[in-house]
Length: 191
Image 1 (cartoon, rainbow, N blue to C red):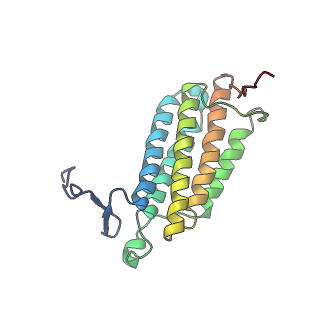
Image 2 (tube, rainbow, N blue to C red):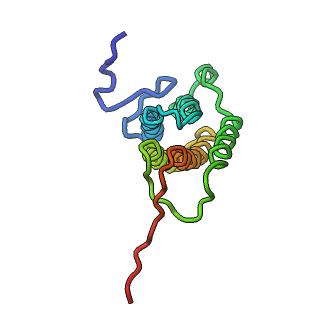
Image 3 (tube, rainbow, N blue to C red):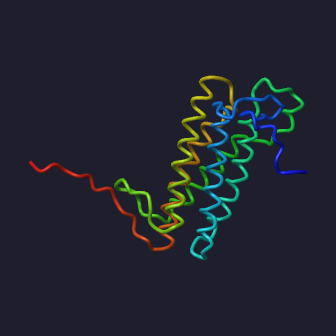
C-alpha cells in the first residue's frame, strides 16, 4: 500500500464511513488538534526518558492511545452507518476516571499551588505545558463542533480533564527534577 492516495488533492478528506468533507471542516479541525496534541505528547515522552520520571511515560503512553480512540470517534459523524460505528474503540466514563486517578497521584508529592505559575521549567514540564495548551484548543474546537452537530458525549469532558492532568504532570516533572517553578509576578503601575 502506498502512503499517498491522491484522493485529498482536491482539498477534501474522508471521515470514517467514507463521507468526504473539506479539509478545513470543523470536525477535521477538532480531530486534527487532537492529533497535534498526541504528537506533542510524543515529544514530552521523549523528554521524559529520565529515571526521575518513573511512571510518567506510561501515563502519557496510555493517554496517547486514548487520544487515538477519541480521534476515531471525532472522525465518525453521528449519521455514519451502524456497522461502521460498531467497529469504533470503546470510549467510556472509565477512561475519564483513569485521568482523575492519575491527576490525584500526580498532585500528591507536589507542593500545594499557591500562585499562578508560568509554563516552563525542565524540558519535560515545558513540553507538557505546551501540550496542555494544544489540549485546551482541541477542547474549544470540540465545544464548537458539539454546538453544531452531535459528537461523542464524553469528548469535551475528556479533553477538559486531560488538560488538568497535563498541568499536574508538568508540575510533577519539575518536582521530580528539583526544578523550581516560576510564579507569575504581575506588573504593577507605580503611582
